[in-house]
Amino acid sequence: MALLEVNDINVYYGSIHAIKSVSFEVNEGEIISLIGANGAGKSTILKTISGLLRSNTGSIVFDGKDISQVPAHKIVYLGLAQCCEGRRIFQQMTVLENLEMGAYSQPDTTIKKNLEMVFERFPRLKERRRQIAGTLSGGEQQMLAMGRAMMSNPKILLLDEPSMGLSPILVDEIFDIIKTLNRDGTTILLVEQNAQKALKITDRGYVLETGRIVKSAKGKELLDDDDVKKAYLGG
Amino acid sequence: MAFLSYLINGMGLGSVYAIIALGYTMVYGIAKMLNFAHGDVIMIGAYTAFYCLTVFKFSTFTSILIAVLLCTVLGILIERFAYKPLRKASSLSVLITAIGVSYFLQNLAQILFGTNPKVFPELMRNSTFSLFDGQLTLSYKTLLTIIVCILIMILLTIFVNKTKTGKAMRACSQDKEAAQLMGINVDNTISITFALGSGLAAIAAVLLCMTYSTFTPTLGSMPGIKAFTAAVFGGIGSIPGAFVGGLLLGIIETLTKAYLSTQLSDAIVFMVLIIVLLIRPTGLLGKKVHEKV
Ligand SMILES: Nc1ncnc2c1ncn2[C@@H]1O[C@H](COP(=O)(O)OP(=O)(O)OP(=O)(O)O)[C@@H](O)[C@H]1O
Ligand SMILES: [Mg+2]
Image 1 (cartoon, rainbow over the protein chains, first blue to last red):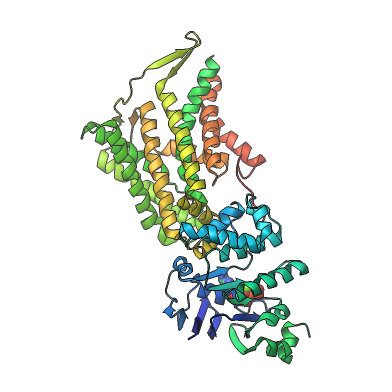
Image 2: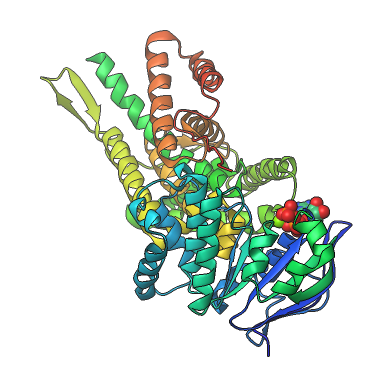
C-alpha cells in the first residue's frame, strides 16, 4: 500500500473549481513531482493534503489512515510535514526559535537531536541561529523553511517550490539536499517550477493542467515527453 | 520636586494603562482585531472584586484571585461566542461585533449592579512616604501600581520568549497557516491570549479602583480608550510597545493636567497620539516587516 494515497479530491475556492477529481499516490521512499503551469493547482493540492484546505469528495489516506478530516494542526503529529510556497518562516523570531517551532510536535528530548541533524545539513543556519529570521537572505530563508519542516522528523515531506528565487548554485544545493534527505529515508512530494531539475531526481511525476492530472509517468520519461518539453522545459 | 512627583504619579497612572494596553496589543497581535469590549472586562473585574470584598467578605487576595479567574473565563467566552464565528469575516464586522459586546456588558452590568456609583473599599490605607527631607511625597499605592506593572511585564516577556506556549503565540501572530503546519492549535492559542489579556484586565481593575474609588458600569470606557491609544502609541502588537506607550501616556496626561489644563488634558493626549502616528505610522516600537522574496 502506498504511503500517501490521494483519491478523487475536489477543491473549491468559492465558486472556482480549483482541483478536479485528482488522484495520485506516493510510495514509501519515492520522490514524486507535481509539475504544472502557474495556477494549475499544485499548491492547492499540497495545502489540501496538509489540512489547510478541504476536499468535499474522496479521501486522503496517509500511512493507512484517512486524514482528509483531520485538523491541520494534528497532521504533523502523524509524520507529514509541509514546507510552504514562499517560505513562510516566522519573520520576527530567531532562526533557532523557528527551528524549535518546527519541532513543536516533538518531545523535548528529540529536539536536540533533530537540531543537530538540521545544522549538519545547513551549517549556515547554525552560524546564524541567533539572527532574526526576517533578516536572513532569501536563500538562507529557504534553507530555514526546509530545516524547520525537517525538525519534525517527517515520514513524508511536502515541498512547494523550494528553489524559488534562488541563485543557480543554491538551486543545485537545495536539490542535493532533497536527494540526500530522500536517500536517508524521507519520502518526498515535490512541487517545482524548475521542472527540468525536479524531473531529473524524480521517481514518478504527475502533470497538472487547470486542476486536473493529465499525465503521469516516470521522471525520465516525462523529461523526454514532447508535450512536457514544450510546455515546461522550454522547448 | 513637584515635577518629579508628577512624573512618578504619571508613571503610576501609566502603569495601569500599560497593563490594560497589553490586553489590546496581544489580542490584536494574534487575532488582528480590536477587542473593544476589553475595557468592559475591566469593569466586570472591578464589580467582581467589589462584591467579593464587601458582600462575601473574602480576603483581598482571594477577591483579586476570583476577579482574575472570572475575567479570564469571560475573555475566553467572549472570544468563543462573539469573535470565533467571525474568524473569516471582514474586519468591519468584527469591529461592530466588538462594540456590540462592549455595550452588552455595560448594559448587563447596569441591570445586575445598578447605575448608582459604588465605592471601592480601601485595600491599603492611603499612606504616603516622603523623600528628600519631605520635599517629595509619594503614596504607596502609586509605588505598588508601578511595581505590579513592571512585574507583569517581566513575567509576560519571559512567558512569551521562553515557554513553548508563549512561542506558539508569537508564531500564530506572525503566520497562522505556518503555525498550524508546525502542529500549533491556533484556536487554543487565541483562547489563551484572550484569557491572559482578560486576567490582566482584572488586575488593572483593582489597581484602578484603589486610586479612583468610585465606579459605575462605564468604568472601563475611558481607561479602555486611553489604553488602546497607548497600545497604538507604542506600536500595536508589541508588548514592550504597550509598556512604553502606557507609561508615556500616563506621564503626558498627568503633566498636562498639572501644568496646562485639566479640561484639555484628554484632548492633548489624543493630539500627541495623532502627531506620533503621523511621524511613525507603526507607533513607537511597532515593527515594519520587509518580506524577502
Ligand atoms: N485563496 C484563493 N482564493 C481564490 N482563488 C485561489 C486562491 N488560491 C488559489 N486560487 C486559485 O486556484 C488556482 C490554483 O492555485 P494554486 O496556488 O494551487 O496554483 P499553483 O499551481 O500552485 O501555481 P503557482 O505555480 O503559481 O504557485 C489558481 O487559479 C488560483 O488563482
Ligand atoms: Mg503554488
